[in-house]
Length: 168
Length: 328
Ligand SMILES: Cc1cc2nc3c(=O)[nH]c(=O)nc-3n(C[C@H](O)[C@H](O)[C@H](O)COP(=O)(O)OP(=O)(O)OC[C@H]3O[C@@H](n4cnc5c(N)ncnc54)[C@H](O)[C@@H]3O)c2cc1C
Ligand code: FES
Ligand code: FES
Image (cartoon, rainbow over all chains, first blue to last red; front, side):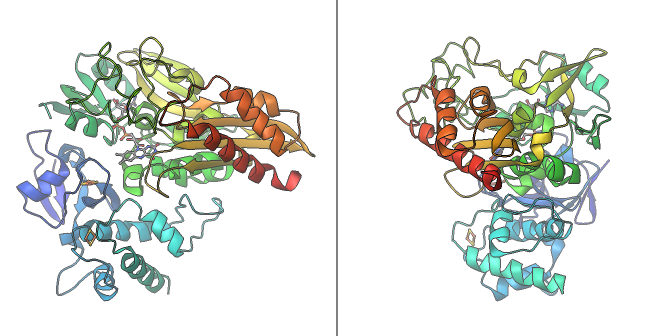
């Protein structure tokens, strides 16, 4: 089997110890995905696995065998940025930019989750299928991505703008 | 990490026959196990991926819910049956970890996750009876803000870190376990143990056991239920104290009630004494306070966590006030 990464087939590593994060960065030189804590606590390594956001530091590359992985490199390019990439630039959703690839991958999946009716801890009525992405909702749903520079206000605004565009 | 091999099991039977072998460990999402392997707390020689076991979430004939062991935490929290009939379970799962981790984590892995005690996780620098029996415990005289106030032992004061399991304890969930052609059903309150003699043994599972599903019985009280978690930051942090509760009222009297606590004990803590004290009585502040005091009479607070007694009291009172609000 193979791991399909940004629409390229990649052979899983022979050594089961290799994390998906290390496969991406060290073997494939897809260095957009960042390593922060390497223990699940920061979200910098967030990628999409079959469209769902996951942490590549706690995923063994062999676990991704037979699945599709999308990294920040697969979302957009400087010429054709993903709407979230463009919105992050417009709203200053970063300072150093280290957390940004993880933030954007997480936000892409988060908007899809919300559109499908996924509730969050702060959703008042869990039975409701309609999610309104208030600032509080966005903050809670994005809490798995830390930003050491404190660019959160811009991040939340960028995401809310794209959410509004998608709803329109 | 030490070298290991990786294989996938396609059935519970296959998983059980591999799990019984020395050095073999089952792998769910890996969010706990891979982390512990990187820290050399766990040293398996072979990982058996069990995410291909059932992940279905279905209504049972009796009207409860059966959740496959490999169901992801996020799928359970989002499921309409869980959201409408067992809101405390949805809310508890959503209170845990982050969306990324909930997408990866399986319900079986959540049940089996190990403590977050910093001394347990520090192989090089700390003594820990749970990790290495008989070596001592650095938490008792150390930084124990996150440790247990009830049900612990001098040998180990670690807490069980799960949010989901607290709701499962209040809901009387039943854990279905497969081993060698036989399935047994373990009530959640008996699933996790007390550390008194063997802090290294956290659950009643034995070699070769594979969790296949979690069954949640019909629970009339669960429709009016809640989960509240108090932590050091608003999100993405483990509980200092958490409360899962469900209530049915008969006019102004508490007809039936279920309460469980998280963050204060070595296992998801079903608060039978709170329930006994409140069942059949009024839903008043005084009754709530007396009930917590009955439960925590046996508490053994430490230097860093004595605040949890008051916090448990206030959190339960807030949750029950909310749940019984319009009937008081
Ligand atoms: C940064 C961070 C923050 C977190 N915050 C929270 C939080 O706030 N609240 C909370 O509740 N949790 C929290 N968690 C923990 C998380 O919920 C658990 O790691 C997760 O539920 C484990 O599930 P898994 O499938 O990834 O298990 P794995 O890591 O794959 O496995 C865990 C254990 O389960 C065993 N196992 C797996 N499947 C089976 C089976 N079918 N039968 C028998 N044994 C099995 C494995 O052998 C292993 O021992 C956090 C984790 C991280 C990394
Ligand atoms: S590097 Fe993966 S969560 Fe921090
Ligand atoms: S922009 Fe620097 S960490 Fe977020």
